[in-house]
Image 1 (cartoon, rainbow, N blue to C red):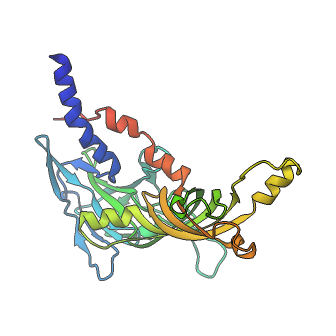
Image 2 (image 1 turned 135 degrees about the vertical axis):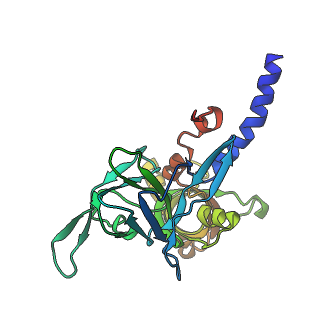
Image 3 (image 1 turned 120 degrees about the vertical axis):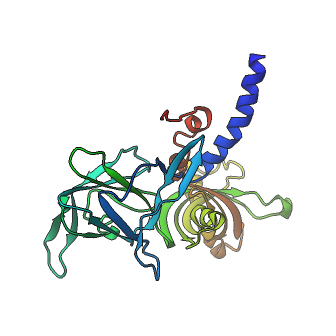
Amino acid sequence: MLAFHLSLLLGCALPHRIVKSLLAPDYVTQVAPLGQVAAVSYTTGEKGSVPEPYAPVLFEAEGRSFYRAVEVTSTGAIDVTPLGDDVELSFWVRDPGLARKDFTQVTAVTGGLDRALPNEIRFLPDHINAPVHLRLSQFANTYNDYDLGEGDLLLVEAKRGDDEPERYLFLTHEFGPRFKYGGGLLFTVPLSFLGEDQPQTTSTVLAFTTSLGYRFRSRSPALRWFGGKSAIILSVGIGSTALTAPDLSKPLDQQLLGHFNATLAGGGFEFYDFVSVQALVNLSSLGRNLSEAPWALAIGFDPVQFGLFTRGIGTRVLQKNTLDGP
């Protein structure tokens, strides 16, 4: 009976966790009083956007109430107006990327002075008696020791005295065109439908890739998922033509030197930032009387992005990790 209940529990829970592991994380915080110490508004940074008050979406789950993180772009802005005197203000950022990090307090932003060599260090106020306007692009400046880009969290805390701070959580996105550069392996797919007389094929290719994606400015979850998980990719790399049979009349190094000389270029579609389907043109074949296959289908693989995607996936799928709370 115990085994039956256990199998039933796993059968119900695992598919849901697997689906969650394939989707972008959705960050929520428990419902708490807001707007008593400070009034916070923001601008998303999208074309035509205007300031609007911080009003997170209410989310109900397991008999508890949560606020979803408010989505903004890395070109948006945040305004904090104190409701009273001497309000303590602090800013925190968190990058849920490859390196596991907790929230880090930001005490200053750095930027280059216009038409001058010095870099300006601008300290953020820790106590305010007047409104503060902060552009998110200041956090994403390359002179800072941190970054604020796709999928990062920004936390604004406002408090007075020893009271519990009010917390305003933002989730940043980069809408519009998104470029990514990387490298990886392209595994060619044999074109068996060409028959036994097909030209000599090309083996694994080491390629440099450039991917162009577009995150849609839409509230549709399907369009946002598609825009965030797919891209058009262009590749150029070197590979080797397959060794058909050993030639005992030539040293092995000469055989290898004559075969690792294929230059390929092409493109296709990329999914989840680490797997792609591409069509490659063998540029070297054009000068060799087409003795090699002039083109090939390939499956691309980016090991770095794959490691990022699968990091901790076993724990997320098999281990329940809920926080106890009132």
